[in-house]
Image 1 (cartoon, rainbow, N blue to C red):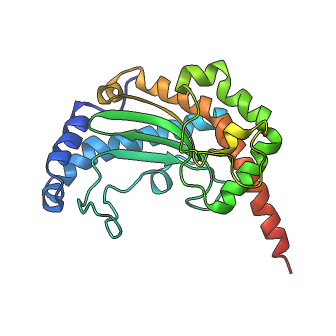
Image 2 (image 1 turned 30 degrees about the vertical axis):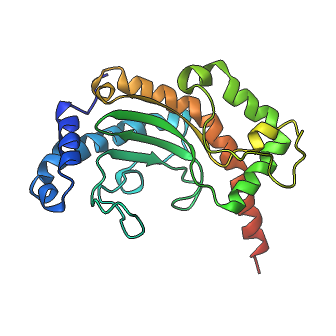
Length: 234
């Protein structure tokens, strides 16, 4: 299947990296729309048609999925105004904006990253996930050690504590998984892979492989949200 991205996509992103300036970008915004944003929107439409087959809960549409090109520099030491990659995320429609586990695609001047998981869970969400892991660790282990998962993304990644978190025995059978602070799975390719006819089939394969992990992480968060809503009823 032909990729919507072209050599002009990568050429624009590489030029943007060399000229990370609002005026430069403003003068070339039509090129950005044609060669970068436009192809990503085309990809979102393809995924919107394919997600119902294996992940109907996921959203793939520009307003919800496409990340802005402009960086938020208010609290960053890096004041460059623009992102030098194009990226989209695919959240679950079961959660408010910015919550829950989902999938991500990023195309940068030097790489393509396809993956998903949970990058920065809140303390309360992390506690719910750890409780879920403690009681359902065999299910998680089957997901992340399965042959399909290993072929597609290798192994579960993300930051981990140096020891088992407080409240759990150090020899708990889920000790290794309880140490995770992030739950990430994905794979990286050279940037030119985004232009290959193999790109879209691989994107679907990786996303479909990660969905069971995504659902495992979302399950306790959905239950927690339901419990909170019930306690708030008059």
